[in-house]
Image (tube, rainbow, N blue to C red):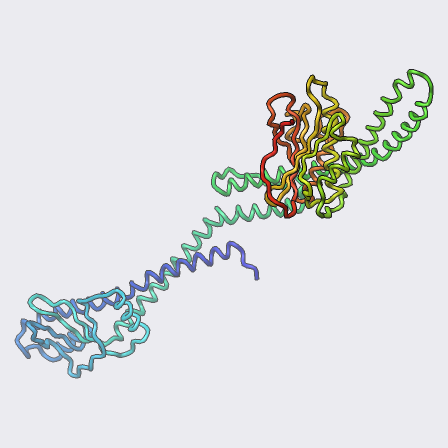
Amino acid sequence: MRTGLSARLLFLTVLFVLIAEVLIYVPSVANFRNNWLSERLAQARAAALILEKSPPDTLPRPVIEELLAGMETSMIALRVDNARRLLAVSDMPPMVDFEIDLRRRSVLRDIGNAFDILLFGHSRTIRVVGPPPRGGDFVEIVINELPLRHAMLRFSWGILGLSLIISVITAVLVFVSLNGLIVRPVKRLAATMKAFQSHPEDARSILRPTRRSDELGELESSLADMQRSLQQELRQREHLANLGLAVAKINHDLRNMLASAQLMADRISTLPDPNVQRFVPKLMGALDRAITFCQSTLAYGKASEKPADLAPVDLAMLVEELGELLMLSPETEPALHAEIPPGLQVMADPDHLARVLTNLLRNARAALEAMAPLPDHRREIRIVARHDSDMTRIAIIDNGPGVPDSIRERLFKAFTGSARPGSTGLGLAIAHELIRGMGGTIRLLENSQDQGPKGAVFEITLPGTNLPRRSGNFSGSLP
């Protein structure tokens, strides 16, 4: 059977109160025993004063027996100047089993003796010694332990009943208080979270915080804010999913129409008309960009990139191949310079890394070609690689106009991270996804050069192989 939080709270409250009562009862029962014996000694001291003043054998025997029975003792003795004097004694004084001296008290010894009488007492005889009346060394009495044990049992049952009453009352008060202050709000939070889990799109499932100013009030406010944010995110994702499906359908048809238009423009370009020859190349360029945009959008929307197959990749050889493919070299405009130690390898997927570097090189070349020529300023791109600890850092540095501040924060977000007209804004988003899939990072660094255009510095960090370490930071300045 499942035990709820309220039942556990009630049980623990009763248990803790009973434990506290036990801790109080243990010394209390010892103190009760001492008080009970002290009362008998007080009566014995009073009787000793009377008996001591009376001539010997003047009190009738029945009076002495009645006196001893009333005090529940069998003997009263007084010691004066090391002389022990029997003041009253029964006809058959029993043998003493053990002695209790109230003049020398010890908490642990008193507790042990009290529980010995309470648990194992039956009909033993106890000699009790206490402070004397004036003019004596001590007074002693001999009693049977049964009356003491019965009194201690009555005291214990009274303590038990009182403890149970206090425990129940305390438990009820604590239960009602904590149930209203803590348990019910926690149950309300749990019910709200369960309802939100079942129907996150329903606005009624969002928690309405109370006016509490304690920790639970803060928790309610935080949970409500989280639910609103999550609900807004879910709605946005649902809208984006629906929009993506519609865009995919439109893109498919639009790409076919653009392809047909491209074929028609290609045939028109064969006409000898000067105006046709003047405008058709621009039309062809616009159609190419539109088709590329459609293809990029569909490719990003599929989200079906194959997992990275990591293997050692010779970075210098890969950059050389990409330079030939993009027709970039130290002699071209813009120029491409590779500063890569021979034999430097990185753990990466060759195809994914090639796509990332191709995108960054194309972006750098486009930014340099769009920049107005400056005197004594040769447009250049540098690829610098360094092995740092267990990672390899690759920097793609250009001396172009740099990345505008307005798009730096959203640089790696799809459809928003581009400042070039006609760009889809997907290149850097895809590059970021591919690099992350290979266990690396990509980021934009600040250029450190003081003169000329600031340019852009993109740093890629990828797992390296076991090569000699050469640490250092990249510098954005160009020779």
